[in-house]
Length: 44
Image 1 (tube, rainbow, N blue to C red):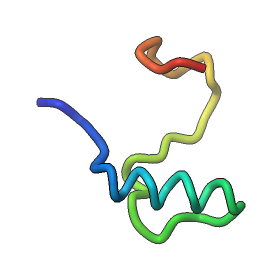
Image 2: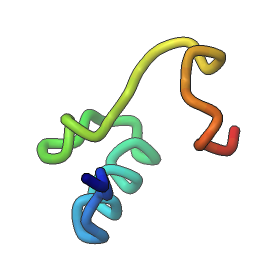
Image 3: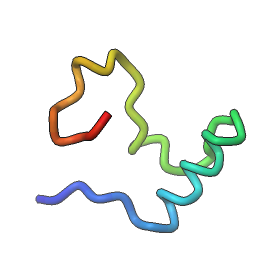
Image 4: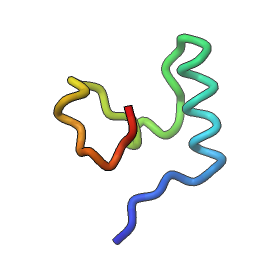
């Protein structure tokens, strides 16, 4: 099973975080925590 974020939701999340607000949709895709605990599949 592949966990991909739909493009529309990804755009909403990125624009909200750039603006400094919490996105209304897509919170299930947001991970908050220490960067060293994230899997190495993400580029930091």
